[in-house]
Image (tube, rainbow, N blue to C red):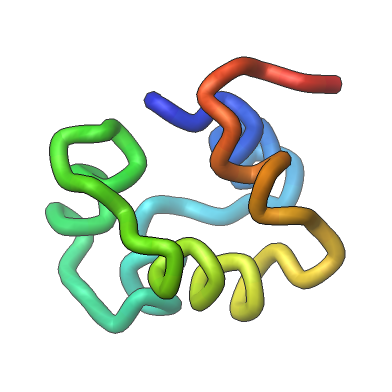
Length: 69
């Protein structure tokens, strides 16, 4: 996964790719492509996901490509 912090938070909170897809109102495949870096994620898509599932977290943290504690 391109976004290790997003992956870690998904695990901590029990979210699946299907949950991300539902928040983005898209297919599981499209969500998987976004989080794996196959397809670019727009700022609006990042914000939509954060606002739906990761309210208390910053976009910088969630979508950093380097893991942070």
